[in-house]
Amino acid sequence: MSDNLRDVEEGVTRDLRDRQTYAGYLALDRLLDAQHPLSEPEHHDELLFIIQHQTSELWMRLIIHELDAVLSSLSLDDLGPAQKGLARVKQIQRQLFEQWGVLATLTPSEYVKFRGVLGDASGFQSLQYRIIEFQLGNKNRQMLDVFAHSPADQERLRTVLEAPSLYDEFLRYLARRDYQVPTDLLERDVSEPHRRREDLVPVFKAIYDAPKRDWEAYEMCEGLVDVEESFQLWRFRHMKTVQRIIGYKRGTGGSSGVGFLRAALDLTFFPELLDVRTEIGA
Ligand code: HEM
Ligand SMILES: N[C@@H](CC(=O)c1ccccc1NC=O)C(=O)O
Image (cartoon, rainbow, N blue to C red; front, side, top):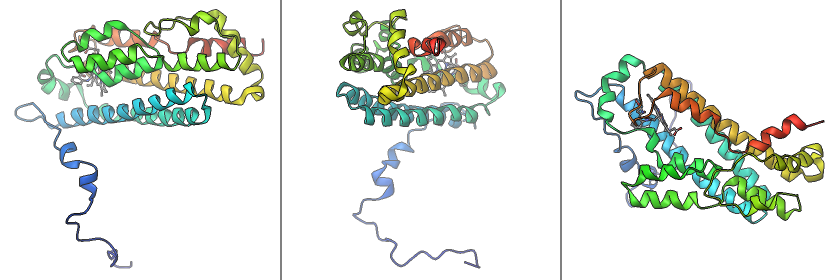
């Protein structure tokens, strides 16, 4: 290696005709042909904008896939795999959070030069983002309206709206383990958002007061809190990135912009899991 050159070993496959290849397996021809800047002349930074969103959508695709598996594991009382799935989701969320640093290199002066080509498009219309919010329990039927232009997408979102969320499945699991989960919560209309319930806090207090009695449930609670916190961190960083790039302009989706994004920080997935912390040791 003294000549700073690595010999390609004899055994390395060179003739890839009629073989499974890297590019073939990953469909790179399609993946790398899906970036189409609209600015004319093309603005240098539009590609950054497109790739930031496309990579986010790819990671969101994986989050949905993992959360589907977590939901199904929970329904089968399979806490180990559910726990593992949540740990993976948390790492993907960390990736999505860190990615904001790349977009933050886009200055307001650069962004205004191509913002016009976005027209009415907005992240508000991200189907996968809405699916994740619904899986986690931020149900909101009004969101279906945005997808009226695409019946297949709307149907997909409606299915998730009407399915139990992660919290619903966890509470059902706890009830099967004889925790005193209020029964109306087990039979609720799952297409509605979960509303904070004081009488749920004692269930979690029992778990947190004696972690060793039911370690699996305890770990699951912490896993859910991790995912909620990571989601809020993403929302916060989105809001701050938007503030530094477009200030207090209205959004292309028609909302007030930063104020609308800030309001999302008040949404919560598992409120009682945070409330219980005040009660620990009391
Ligand atoms: C220059 C960068 C960005 C700007 C200026 C921006 C701006 C905004 C604004 C103003 C909204 C509110 C809806 C509207 O009126 O348009 C919004 C919503 C949204 N954006 Fe972005 N955004 C940016 C980047 C991103 C990225 C990289 C993603 C990742 C997929 C994203 C995902 C979303 C989502 C999911 C919403 C809906 C949030 C909610 O309903 O609470 N945005 N964005
Ligand atoms: N809402 C943004 C535009 C925007 O960010 C956007 C436009 C098209 C595709 C994705 C987008 N990302 C997130 O909202 C704005 O008001 O500038």
